[in-house]
Image 1 (cartoon, rainbow, N blue to C red):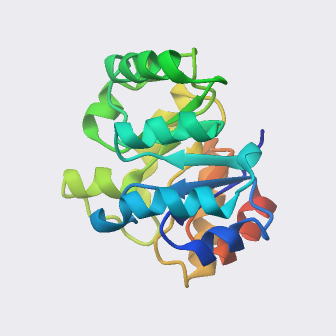
Image 2 (image 1 turned 180 degrees about the horizontal axis):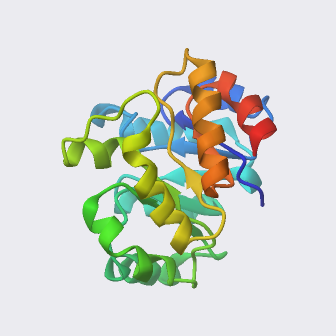
Length: 213
């Protein structure tokens, strides 16, 4: 599977979910975590189920163990794991999956904390379920009070570190979705460093990401 464009869509917004599959994104990630309000998380699972999405190109960004059960029950091919920070965390999830899954579920860890950065080597060595990892710069920057400028130079060393441990990782999202030129610059920087794709949060970003990566 390619990961040039990885499009994230909120799990409680049916129109956005259906729209995602009309685009040329390599992978659609339906979110049950930060973009879904707490009072909508249970309803989001019902919406996803009713949308009858293409599970061969869909991962779920989980929020809790209930989401993991949902992924197994619905036979999605993989999950994005927010705040992946240790091998122990991955082993615990692996144990849960093995007890229930009908098909092997891939894990794409999101590295978005200092602890995740510190344990990058052991995370990347968890080959049982991990083929690629992803970078989440925004929560990382927030946790260490790092102000990231338009050229994103402040996260360059983190990008290089991730590439040094993982082949063809997925780069962080670009939050100003209206600034497509800025998004393109961000893609180009990530491509030069060694990333193979980009997290997208808006339909307008998908074709640009596909073109660059």
